Image 1 (tube, rainbow, N blue to C red):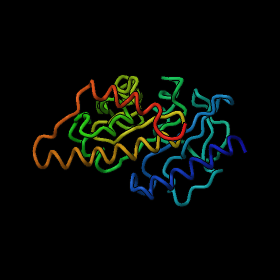
Image 2: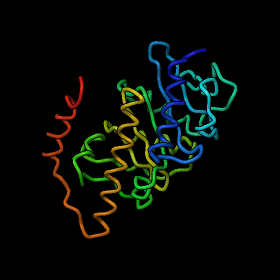
Image 3: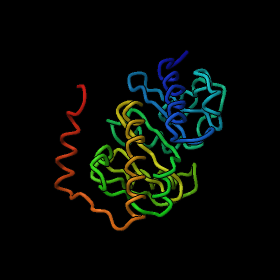
Length: 213
């Protein structure tokens, strides 16, 4: 089976999205780029994560040509492939409709540095303009907004996170859900204090050597 390891990881992390309450049903999608093989494994559209099997995961070329798998790929394949081409450090993409991050996206707000863990993205999480799902316009809007960040809110839609691995992209989605919840809750009380760019530069540098290297 082509990209057997990557397909198994798509199934594993899809179920982790459910367990972490970052998505429901078949919502959201994940992809992994094997740069050595120059092939992409991506979730099939509309398939429940609990029922999805590795062989259901679709394998594509970076240009979107299907090379393995009987099912249709994600409806958001267009922006997955665009992100993988956008930066050489992106090998995995996670897209969810997680509740608190999507709440901020539905307000058409960026997510500022209300907590230092926003550093998983950068000094903030930028916001992409709204466009219909699956369209070239949405893909263009995400690429324009994400820049060098590791995450991007999608207006009235959700969030997309990227990483060198599916684990890092998942971790970013999970941590930013906490930050989004904190921002929501502090806005309910008053106006939160936002960390300055100078402090976030320090945080982002420290994150480069955080954890087991």
